[in-house]
Length: 255
Image 1 (cartoon, helix red, strand yellow):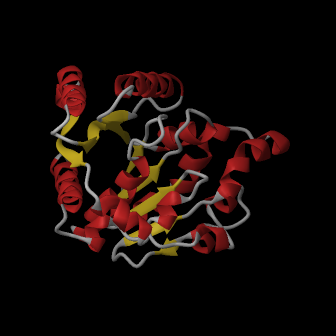
Image 2 (cartoon, rainbow, N blue to C red):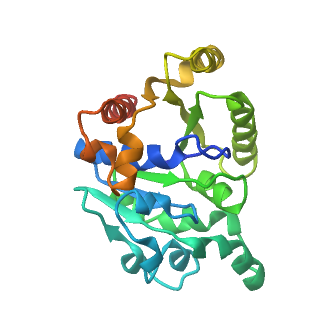
């Protein structure tokens, strides 16, 4: 049975989608069967894999509303061993759909949708939206663990406090088995005192839960996004690629 990992932080711009795409690609590179779940209505995880999400006939919205089954929604990407459950702006209306239909157990729809799917994969990676609403709760309820990207810039620790509070509520009310896979330092630039200080604070507070791997600022990462490819295949020898390969190995070694 595959391990389900959410990439979550309610703060935008911290590298959630970039991490979801490139960690998924790196795990697939090491021969693991991976499903990337785009659970953000912006659809950027799909775009980052070269998918035109605006032209999709069906998305994860149709799966969660039981309009379509998994086979109709699932996309086999150009990356070997990597599949995608795509999303687009339609996902933003999931809240109103549940209200209109009186859907019960609304926080469990993603978990239920992935119940059988996870047996087909070694890892299921969920790209979460930058919020603490229904979608994010669903993702955390469905997950075994969560990776928290922490941008090495201002207000990083405030964002960490907010997501930890959210995780605690989920553990107490919906998913007692949810654990923190690790804090991931992103957009790290060793030349700046601020990045060094944020990294020091995070490692000081969460020493045993912080990945050794650090994701650096690297021009190859945004360049690969523009090309609709993971940086791990776009420029496999770039510093950004090497960092995500190292993260995948660290995750695999941690079991």
